[in-house]
Amino acid sequence: MLPDPPKSLLHRWATPVQVLLTLGLYLQLSVLGGLAAAPGLYGAWAVFDATVAWPRAARAVALAMAGFAAYFSYAVCIIVVVGAWRLLTRAASPLGRFRYYSREGMQWASYNALILLVRYTCINFLRVTPLLPLFHRLMGMKVGARVQINTAVIGDSNLIEIGDDTVIGGDVTLVAHAAERGDLLTARVKIGSRVTVGLMAVIMPGVEIGDRAVIAANAVLKKGTKVGPDELWGGVPAVKLGARGEAPSEAT
Image (cartoon, rainbow, N blue to C red; front, side, top):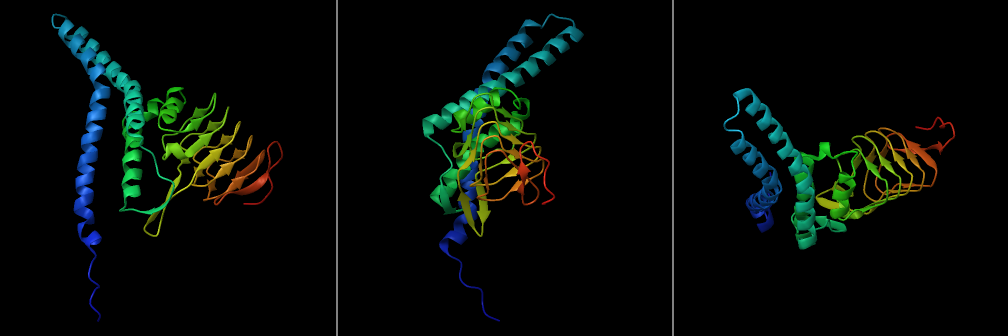
């Protein structure tokens, strides 16, 4: 039996370096999250001090309401704080193919961690509100007018473009990256105007969707799929089923 080949320096130190970078990332996110939470916490603290002499039941109600108000204050403030940090640092997902353990890989991870901070703390309360398109604009996405976004699962915002009057349905996966044999691949995603992307559809890197197209619920548009204007697509992987306004074909 042949001995295992010697491990490279990268393989030996990859995990310790990743741990250190992760701790540094946690510190950065703690600062940003703390700044966003501070105004609401200050208000809640003021309510706590102002209601010391209140009856216990009334004070409990006041404090509970102040706590929820502090949370929603955080949801608004974190958009501004994270967006301002991205603009200051010019953070973005790089374009192309690169190794996980590379400068581009670290750049990709640190940028998307900013999106995840919002996603995992409050984004469900931002869905289908003007605040969610605003957040993604601040993260570098090109978003048209009157766009409705009803999903939390969006990554690589700076590589995504959405036209006017488009609807991104509930729990759609919209990302511009994929993992392939030890590499990360990123490619721009372009969605036209007046497009409807159905519930839980998956949009992969390099996808282009023409104006007024319809993507059926649960459809999976694999990498590089080109959907023409007014076309209806569905299935796994998605294929053209017909045109908008027509009865869909039997193709699956």
